[in-house]
Image (tube, rainbow, N blue to C red; front, side, top):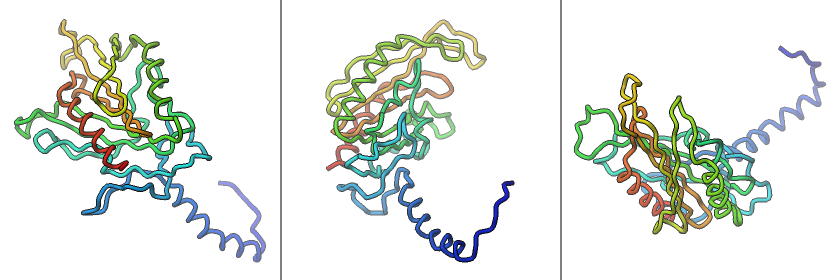
Length: 254
């Protein structure tokens, strides 16, 4: 425990008087995905709080002209028949996928806000006693200036430099292609690896999952589909989630 010399009475009073101001500054700097009040419409103007829950690489630019809070309504919600459990807030660092390195964490200093949520899905019509089929992590970044298209450009370059990588002793191959008709621009990545049984033995087949990244004006959203306990993801459900998610962001930005 550190030791210090007590402040004189006058200086102590001055220090105590500053505590409320410091508290206000701390609260103003806090940042998370915010819950929408019951019955409220999606935000159409940016609140005055900067959301910087987990900076992807560098902290947001201090000169950023836009201050943003990402509301819960900006995130996708699964329809009841596909929803295994309600969406939940997730740290951005845990939600972003990793391939050869930190390809998806290259937002840079033009990021004005970041937040993430996770949805757990099931096949429609399955009994509630069944295990989930998978989960999808969704991350949203908002950018200042030309940061959003710049992020997509850097990501494409990074993905091209990572055709495969090792994960838990398995070789994972990565293929990417444009995803037309989604947002202003979008990218779809497919990861493929040797399938293993519950005992960890290879079955001779392959498993796969997908990552989708879409830009909607000055925002970028990343969807990472992970099959349950290392199994394949569901491309049909991911495609629906991506398109619904882009519409949610577009509605929020209006």
